[in-house]
Length: 384
Image 1: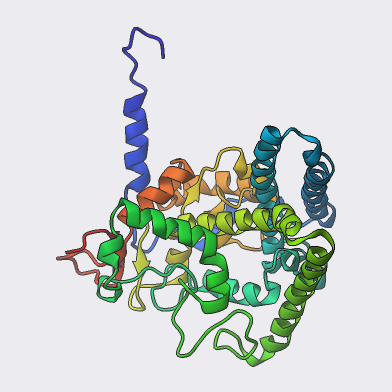
Image 2 (image 1 turned 180 degrees about the horizontal axis):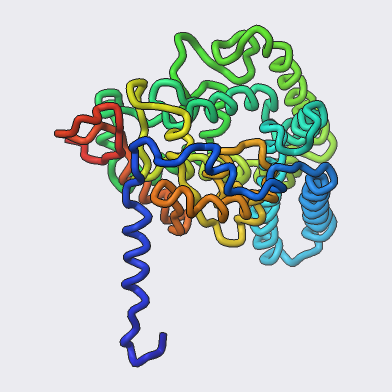
């Protein structure tokens, strides 16, 4: 920098981008899960109720402070500043509440405490407050973790094979089409997934996270699906009474728009964790749990990594050891990198650039032509 224009900084950046999209190995790894686990300090697997609750209190304190400032002081601002203040509130509050969502996600993995009843209680309250059916999502997400990278059994963001992509895909495979697709995905993707299983695994009949008798769930899970529905309905009932008392615009500004931000980040984070030119997917002839769990990518969201409790940049460790609490995941990730070697993938591309690149490059999957590994699929973008 500043050396008479003779800087070589851009070259390493280009190399880093090239390394990020270099394919990870798809062969069975030369190390075992137990070897990876032994590399992690034992305390990383210990869950602390006090420490876990400290993150809940921290996030909710900030969320309440933002709510208090918005509802007590924004109306005192001059009109130009008020127009700026509300979008700022929406963005920051949405990020903070995404952190709350992540803590509930921890509860669903039994990573919050040593007590399942406590995890489920906290998770049900936090997720219901964000209109997420806690147990419904917990069980479908567990199956995602059990089948990651499988084209036949994974639960969400299962890529399509070339023969399965819709006729309309070629009309969306352009900048305007990608922009529309990304916009719809980030704004409506989460409720569409929960309600209509959009982007989810195909089932033999209609699948919905709110349906206790849907094909996603077993008989022993149905009662908890009812409980999830009651939790969401209770929050909706409260929001209805708030709208009657305060007005619909008040509810939308204070709660609705930040919730849209939460939903957008949730979809963005999940999509980018499992969609990348370097990642393979497997059909039933090649898939196994270990290789599927390794077929994910850690991303860099800058300061938001901490706000999101590092769900963004420790995702590989999370898929290998999902009951590990988030506050140990960074240390665990650092410990397993030397063991994983080329099987570990980190991409520092800013998320707003990454989603555009992945939407461009990752249209469908197919096996490499002329190879014997027909059960290993890679992303492609060529549409004839």
